[in-house]
Image (cartoon, rainbow, N blue to C red):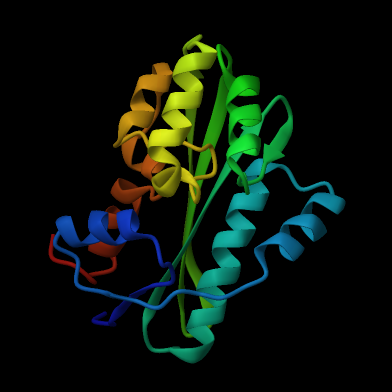
Length: 199
């Protein structure tokens, strides 16, 4: 199978991960109402795993409808803490409040990827990583937010492990690429098995 690959995401880090792995693709961001879909799924009792998977699938399905002959990769990431999912922070104040809740505690970061072709799901995976934050000071937290706000404002947990956000943690158990937003190794394995990339 030799189908062109489309990444249904505007994420720079996801694009960098694929590009650095030698995968030829183009990015076509999927525009969906994530908030509305999230609320609908949560109202139906969907947990973090199903929520991440459904959001990733919605993006892949939308772009696949426009490019049915392409292999479309949809992605999403969800943070789960004490039985609830956490939305992105809109302001610095919300970010500070969130990180104070997570401080000294463990949470889960779930990164989903769904691949569509010809309008149907061909493969799906949800990587789950356990993240344990250290007990950082209020002073460091405020300085961290001020220094990094432009970079972290779109990150679900207000941190990027590949940047200064790594200093917020004392332990990370799971796949590093999933923390960055893409379960890269399982995805590459699927693409190799399908003959989309050389193996």
